[in-house]
Image (tube, rainbow, N blue to C red; front, side):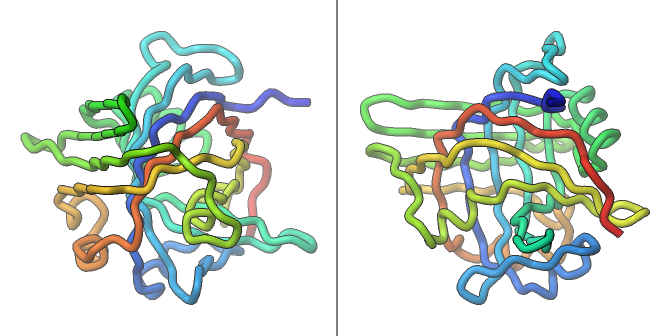
Amino acid sequence: MLKPFLTANWRYLVMLNFAVDPKILAPLVPVETELDFYNGQTFVSVVGFLFLDTRVVGLPIPLHRDFEEVNLRFYVRQKSASEWRRGVVFVRELVPRRAIALIARTFYGEPYSAVPMRHILEHKEGRVFAEYQWRRGRRWETLAMTSTGEPQGAAQGSHEEFVTEHYWGYTARRAGCSEYRVEHPRWRLWKAETTKFDADVATLYGPQFVEPLAAPPVSGFIAEGSHIQVHQRNRELE
């Protein structure tokens, strides 16, 4: 069996979720996939998290093992034989390491950019605070969330399950669409008590996302995270 292309621990995933008009997402949907709906709505998620102990084909990259990522993603599905593969499409992904961004763009065609980033993480006495920041120009932009209590598993059929249980990645390419698989166990979640998202959305993600990301989020939670495996891009859909 081939080794996974990338392994890491994804930890403290801050996930802020917004309803969005499917017409906004339609031009970004890769060929051979379709938008995935939950209760008649489509969603985008702003997600910030920690990459820890990152390895490419089993090998650590010096000075590139631990870092932050912030991305904007939406949800699609793709019919394979008799099953639906539920996946994500990324609008933009930010990391602080140029080598990581280059690898992701080269091997997966993902829209990665390298920018200065930092984070604050506090988890003690039943309270979790996670803040991810990135700098564009002279301004630091922010995604942050607080939660309390013990993390819980997402209920079957819930909105939280919909957001977290997508195990495929799809990327539009000139020849069609690439597909790759991400493996991880089901995550436990803390529901958000406070949230903060402060960014120039028009220049970060595009003017079409300004209105939906300025609306109150439908949900917010922090996923505990786990060890993950990202497998080789295994085929092209046309």
